[in-house]
Each structure stands twice: as structure tokens, then as C-alpha cells.
Length: 364
Image (cartoon, rainbow, N blue to C red; front, side, top):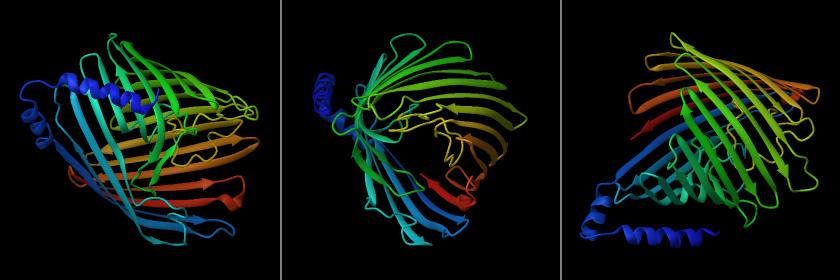
């Protein structure tokens, strides 16, 4: 099924939803729509060991979005982001390839009723192995009590972050794209069961199951995923992740373990996004024969949030340690500032580095 076929189907759905006073109501849907956006200043500096030059850059980012109000279940959403670098320590630290300075990352029509939501066009997707912005069509079905079924097909993917160069929409797997079926059941108190299947034709199939248990003070997660690779030169991959966490007296604690396949790591599963790696960089977490232990702590006091995490990854008889320390302060409801410090102690001392980043974010 191609995106154009889905557009025809949704257009028919649009036509069937229109009624008397159509032009007046449609005009109201647009004129009463909501505009939102942000203005961001970001900078980072990385001090590298050995013969590697230090690196860093400063940049600005502006985002602007618009969404109509609901009209018979229909909405139109548009959003773009523009990024620009102000300075670099070394040429190419910000961007050494030809990438856009602005991107229309969201442009879609959606329809929602009691049982289903359909979204056609450019949209943000946040699933276990599918993230960032996609040119896709997605259906979210809620017809079964306590159950959410997500069906989707994506043709192209783009990245529009506030702290890095933009990445333009590019084809996924040639013209074949990728498909996803994600099921989540939340009918048992404090428990969420999630299973999923991805198909990337001629590349691989991915599958997995995730169990989340959460109360006000305690929680835990067990997550397993595997890949069935179609390329003869690529071994099947797998990953097992487990985490326990607790919240008390404004403190958050989490302790986790991640293990990958001995020969293939996670295979091709991070082709269109991932959500398991808990570290800011985590350079080796998805490597073959990688075993990662991590411990994190967070503290919130009024408008100030502090967090720290330590992770150690053993992979192929090597080791890498990483420390993350972060702070964010909300000056008011619209303006916040934050900083993150990263220290990486790599197997090869020439790959050691410290990185400090700063973000100022105004939203409207």
C-alpha cells in the first residue's frame, strides 16, 4: 500500500464528514486554530584526549507549529524547524555535510472518533524502534477496552532536534519503507503489557515484548527484542533490558541492566529509531556482546531538577564508562535553562572525552 492510496481514502473520509454550513465551520476550524513555538539557544564543547582536536559549536533553533481545532473529528497540523550555527571550534564541528537549515517536519491530516485515530502525512512517531519524524500513515485503534493497537507504514524519516543539525527526509529501505504493529494492554492495575512487530522488507523483521509495572513509589521494566535479518551477511540480533526504579521524598532512583547478542548486537533494530539506551551518549550499548549496568538518581526542588547517571558497558572484552550530570531550572512557565556534563572513559584512552552542553529554551 502506498501513501497516495491512503491519501485518497482519507480524502473520501474528509468528504463524508462535511455537512451543512460547511464553509463557515471549516473557516472557523482554521481561524480558531492554535499556534505554538519555541526559540532555543544551544552550545556544546567537547574536550578530547590524545591527538584528537577539541570540538564544539553554538547554534540557534526556532520552531513554529499550527493546528486547527477539531472539525467533525478532522484536524490539520503543520510545523517547521529552522536551525543555524553561530560558531564552531573546528570547521565541520556543527555540520560537515549538506543538510537543510529549515524543514517542514509536520504536515498531516488526522481523523479521530471514539474508536480510531488516523494520521496521514509528516508526523512525529515515538515507538520502541521508531522515532523522530516520518512521512507515514498511522492508525491507532482503541475499540478494544484497555487496549491500544497501532498500525503504521513509513516511507521516509527526518530528524529535527534543537541541539544538532537538521536531517532532511530520506527514504527508508529504498522505496519499500517500514511497517509496524504495536499492541499495548493496560487492563491490569499498575501493569502495561506491550508487544510489537516491525517489518522492513528485504532487510529484517523485528519483534519484542515489554512489561511495565508502576506504582506511586516503585516500578520495574523487563524488555526483550530480537531481529530476524534477511541479509545473509547480517546475523540475527537481540537485546534484553531490565530496570527497577523508585520515587520518594522528591528523589527518583533507577537501576538497570542491558545485554545484547554475543555476535550481532541488536542487528538492524535501530534503523528508524530506538528508546532503550538510557545514557546521553552510550556509544557501546548496542555493540555485539555488550553488557551495560547503569544507576541513575534525580532530585526535584520547586523549579530546579537535578539528575545524574553512571553507566558501565563491557563489550567484546573491552570496557567503557560514562557519567552524565544534568540540571534544569524553570525560570517561569515559558523559559528554562539547562546544562549537561558528560564524561566518557573509553577502552582506548585516545577516545576519552568530556562534553559540556548548555540550553536556553523559550516556548510560546
